[in-house]
Length: 503
Image 1: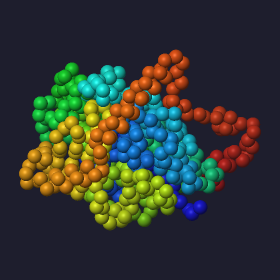
Image 2: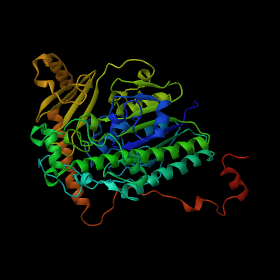
Image 3: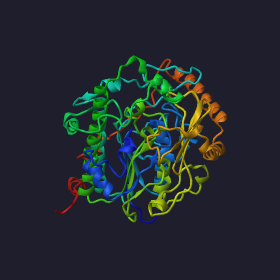
Image 4: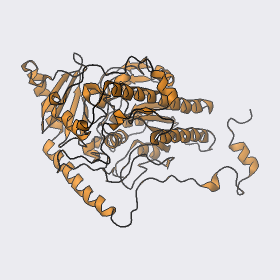
């Protein structure tokens, strides 16, 4: 096996990529991410494969869009037969480990990881399955509502802070363990946080950093419900918008909590990078989010659409042989898996015909990209699949239920002028429609989603009747192998568990 680099993947949840135009915006208090950006290739226009947690993460890990993976929504099983970057790396001799969230649904809770240090923060069963047979229906006990906005504020501990504190702690422990393990295999450690995902609640020390922040109101005016596009109206309905009166104070507090949690994440990432440095290990470092958050822009919150706030994510790669630079060309999180394999000199040839992503190495080294970036969405707040192409300066969205959307992202980065009805752009619209139709048969896609939903509702209701055996991952720690035990030689233990040795 050739010498291969260690790999550290730092993933966050729901981080709006417009806040990372070239690393973190200069007004964000994020010194560790700013330092990482300075030694990374920064992809200024990176997009999720699907703007929702489970579909976006399955696409990121596999290099495939939801229609290939079958992970259409937050309750769709990720099949164990689909190779992920963890499978590719492990097959090539890597240790593969996950600390934190990946929102795997189904009985396979590893998907190529040799070790998992924490459980997940979200359930692994089919209970969050949407139902296209009931358009407009919402499931009160798990659908987002705008209480995350009205309830924004300060707390010293929350469900999510408890989780991410543990994720970071376990990751730091693992990095130190890797430095003294005696295992000569290269390692690939994924550390995946749930922040800055709503609710927008932060610790006081991070909240106070943004007391006089000039960005507590969204750019541009909100769009009234009647003037929103049909999908945006569905999303507002799914968020139970009519039950909430959102004031400017609510908006400012929600955004402040969100920015504060970026600083919280920066602190945790700093702890991890410090452990890597202190243990004298080197690694390729990838920083990425699964999707973004609208943060009140256009009057929308959370994700689930293809507007920039929701679909655009930060993506940075620090690796030997990659000079730090800014890449403006559109790319996708589904490109990360083939890029990692390329960096590790691992062939994906056997599965490339069924992979949607492409390696970013040539682009990162100054090359060009001519292929479009594709996105799909077929989850909560939709009644039929939506698909999108980002091609050059254009963004084109199509859904069987809705009017087409066409935006010139150079002239209109806020996506306020839909050019699909402008005769001047008929040629562009026709060309992008043809590309979209060549890629997606929306009627067939819709039928596949409906079949999956209907089957899962039957299975979920059956499995919750009688004895219940959840799929949620249970991390195991063998206490007999921790610290000092009587099958160990104390002298050997004290030598091998010390790093560095002899100083």
